[in-house]
Length: 483
Image (cartoon, rainbow, N blue to C red; front, side):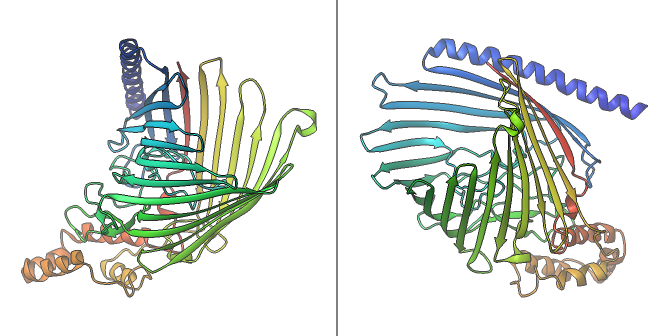
């Protein structure tokens, strides 16, 4: 009974801290609003509890509480031609110091002309059509540590000019202040077996230092079609991961942001309750050369099902990535099916269930999201993710086999020897005596080196890409208060 008491005490203490922080946020924000007394102020506080099916493979806690605060102020000129939006965001997390973070989601000025509009500052832009994957969505960096469906974005500094023509809308973007992905820390969940070192990012040379560029044209065609084409030149929002070859002290991955060119295409056909969606990209500039990916699917809505007033939407999508097993993610040639339910009631009750299936590896991921408003100022949200892996991942239990498995892995075959690898090999033969080398490979450091190699083997197993998340099934409950 002792561990249970300790766990409940920790959760209780965390909830107390959350209540204190939310009170401070409430009073300070209202004081600020009173001082400024400009614009329209809204506030949002969320309390989150997340529980996993097991403790983490790297010893992370099974339960975690968190909270966030997100105020927003909106001001508009009397003529309605100018407006300013400001929306900061702060999250505190009980276990993951990297997830405790502050960001400015929006801080931008909008000016509207007769046939054009400009935005200057920090904001978010959403591209894409399909439900489960967003291949073309590249303007903003994802806020990866927020979890969920990946819809959370970091605010992106930009200059955006929109031009409205008879045929469609042209958007031009100049993006400055590149935002790096923040990966989960040592106490975080849903992470790789080895940490990704947020303090050691690597960058390709940009076309214009410190600036990325994007352009997008969108137009309707007839009564049923809408299409868009886009191009992006800049640093990739999804970094490649490299190993630092520090086997003994601080083994970790580092994120590499490569200079890429992305051509994107989107199309949507809507006829009554039927919607066909597709989006695709062609990307150059990354290791391995140019690659293409496409996501396409249909959804059909059964409105007012059996006279209940409820809507049920069925969704089927397919994702194709030309890199196949070499793609650095799970969705390379997979099928996704889902159901979206909308009660259409006063409480705005809704739910979305999605299942991803990989026909090659037989891996499956099930995702559930649901929400319901409580009263006039509260909303409760439920989300969960479950990973199903076929069979047991084979991890070598001795040093020699682990080395040979890595050297035979497609991820490493034909790859150039990195500077980190050269330094590691040099340190073995020049910094250690023969006796010390024997100790490294057969003595006290054997387990540490073997553990690092096993972690590398686990994440580079193309036949079981999700095995390292096998202990990370979770259910999350979030209570949001609006005022």
